[in-house]
Length: 198
Image 1 (cartoon, one colour):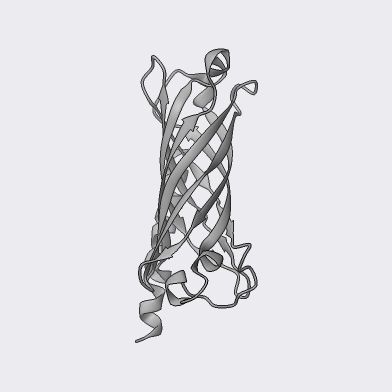
Image 2 (cartoon, helix red, strand yellow):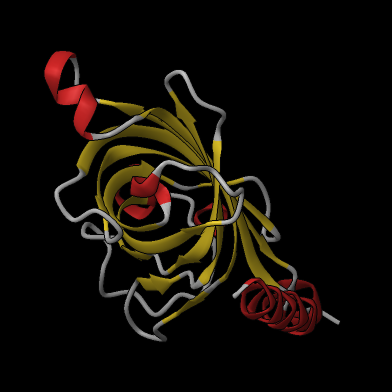
């Protein structure tokens, strides 16, 4: 199983170095459950980091970020659980959806909110790799929705802060589920722009 993830990670790095369109993302999730509800999901918070390949449709602002995801689940009265998995975020820009400009918000001088506001839907799957005894963390499915803005620092670099909600379901113990608020940011590298101007 771990070799499979290593294989996917190397392919992702290889494609990123050739096409130079990749993104780094980090998020902090805090549990919405308290009291008796908290016993249904042992993690009180989650920190994750991920590496993604970036691509989009040519004439529409619909973007895809397939990638590799690593999560650290902080569990009450237990050691943290380390999970590794796959994530496939899908982002669209509802206020500027029909647009064939393959360029960052930095290159669009007017209407920065209209050009930069996005909604991101993120399905992901992870499996435990730390050997923890908490059954609920063995196999997990997550579905998140976020809103954010992209800020083009240059043609090569874009920052994307975001906030949203995530629902998590255990596949190892199907009666367990959890809800989280999350805050995070993504950094998008578009080194392919450098090649266009050579």
